[in-house]
Amino acid sequence: MVNESLIARCAKQESKAQYELYRALYGMMMGICSRYERNKQDATARMNQGFLKILTNLEKRRPEVPFEAWARRVMINTVIDAFRRDKDRKTHESLDQPDEYGDTGTINDYLEHMESEAFAELLARVPPMSRHVFNLFAIDGYSHQEIAELVGISEGTSKWHVSNARAILQRAVSTFSKNNERTVAS
Image (cartoon, rainbow, N blue to C red; front, side, top):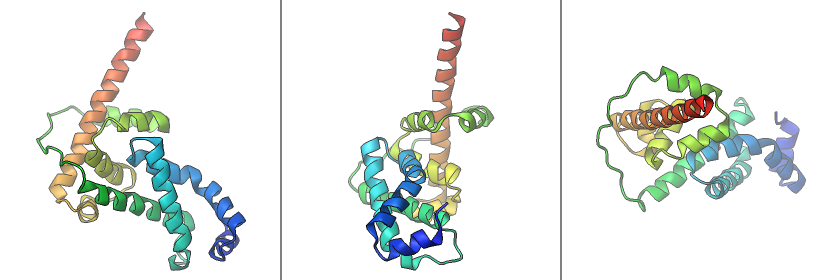
């Protein structure tokens, strides 16, 4: 947990305090960025952009908001802003309806117990837009209405992206489980 004296020293631009804050927030920041970016280099770049925003906006933080929650929101917004900038440069994904799939209880139970690296590896299989929307909805707790406003899509499209990501993740988990059963049986 980050204490207020460290934050005050960072606001005074003390480099040692800034480094200490970076180390204290690194795991949380990298975890957020890794969920949204496909490779570590891009995740690190986003993390550093977000940390710079945290440092330059310390005076804008409301004191009643816990620092970690505020920093998390800044980091998520940094990733979303970068995604919006990149969105225009990338080709649009097909919005065909996904195939019907079974109960998501199995995937949710499995994902709860996975290590974050394994989850990040599975999540990398999901197309970028669906991955971003899924992260915002399932992990960061945004509503479909909030996601629609943040990303510039309709609520229905937000719901589709979550459904698409879950279907892809469920197929990946199913494949993983089948491969493990074969290995155990051998």
